[in-house]
Image (cartoon, rainbow, N blue to C red; front, top):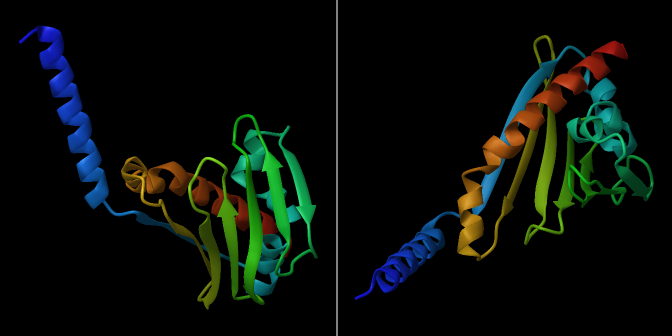
Length: 177
């Protein structure tokens, strides 16, 4: 057996093994971060539910000041949508899908490169010293076994952005008191 043929068989076996493992890996992910903000929820909620205000605290807008953003729907209501195009942050779309005033905001987030939209949520809970704000994103990477490997990377990929975004939100909300 020639060396090239042997190398081909080994590479094929490795790729098949990785694909097989990918099928048994989880397809669902969840990333979550929390912070306590020294402000009542009614001072924080408007910064979340009005997608235009995300530019004041969102990490991605600061990274690409040339990001093209379009908004549609009623500000701060179910159905409000933001769509963006960015050379460095990617293209995407977010739509508010559920609201509980001053308590919870849920949105659908989609990117052209990912198979399924994810769901994001902000939960606001009164605690000693202010409001605990929890930001989470969860979804399913679909049936592609290669995408299942990304489940393990999601926390690493977006968790730090959630932390920085929550820190920025804290500064913005506390400054508005």
